[in-house]
Length: 505
Image 1 (tube, rainbow, N blue to C red):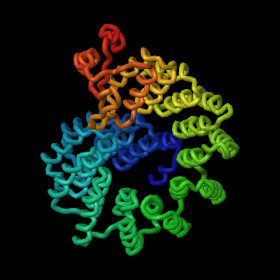
Image 2 (cartoon, rainbow, N blue to C red):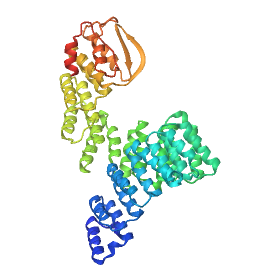
Image 3 (cartoon, rainbow, N blue to C red):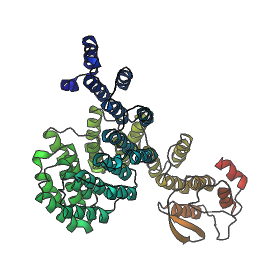
Image 4 (cartoon, rainbow, N blue to C red):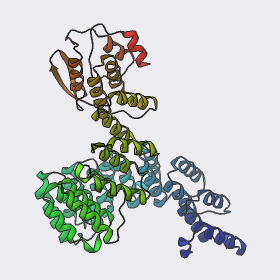
């Protein structure tokens, strides 16, 4: 049955038929393996049909079908199967709960995870090291690091997986102090650190103030012989380039000749781009292909950003050609990078950017914002406002970059009426703010992190409008009435609440 792992779905069907013909399908081991193999072929229908037709099932059978649905992301169906298993005579084991919690963690379904925690408490499996580590991982990945720590402390027995999961949990919430405290406790307890321990820690080291800490951690990596692991090597390159020097990152990269993968090359390429060494980034891009590594979406996104200068226009077009050749033009990050690149080119760059924009099937907020910024940059303010209205009609996510561009275009047009509507959109979308009162001439506002408020003050000045500190509160009252999150308060004497109501609706 091990050879079935390599079978195509068609071959698996043929094997299933042969098992039925020979009568061996009644063997639990064979049936369970077939369910697992159907799951690996993403044929859930056949897996479930086989499961339903089994005259007898054991815990492995239930675990196999549960794992199949968990790995496919069907948590709703998974929970129904779990409920059916609870009514059967068979009890959960650590593998059952481990599989479910893995899917819960990936989906971030905290409530379902808490239900499974309750089941574990009732069955006593919360004390099992395997299922306990899975529960710890679930809470950590759902952002409940305090609950994860409580689970960790309550575990009667821990292994390196439990410790690594806690380290990764603190790393995920960027708690550098606690992550390194856990590392220290691991060493005091005599737990051997591995690549799963140090890789998350390296991701926390992203500033020059952590240079000495990066050096110390890398010494531990060398001491334990972990430098040859891909994940450690890749994270070390990034950490050194961000905390210490580019030369340190290069030394790690040069010493990793035997264990390089695409991510390693991408890490080094990203390090050069971070230090504005575009020529070296292009060399990495060429070398990785000479060594037989195929660039992926991350590679192209990075190298396209290196072509944004006017003098690299020919390089950018060549890279664009490679993107098309490799069938990656529908990748959203690559499309966004190409649009941003062409917009920075002076002659006919906007035409090329629009060609990509209209031809790509998948777009996100960044795609729309890039074109919006391109219109504003090129002085096409009417087009920018039309695009903004289109974004609203298509329910595209609006953020501070969008509003900065829209208000700038309104400022260029000196069209106060349109701008007042833009501010209503700012209100209703609830953008982030810094709680710092700020006075700008006759405008009393709260400074927003994205500077939209400052641009708004500039707009009113260009329009020759005076906004007094004693303005009527028509806008404010309307927004409170509609229970919207107030992020920017900017009111104008004589604002028409009826007109505002129409805009809000």
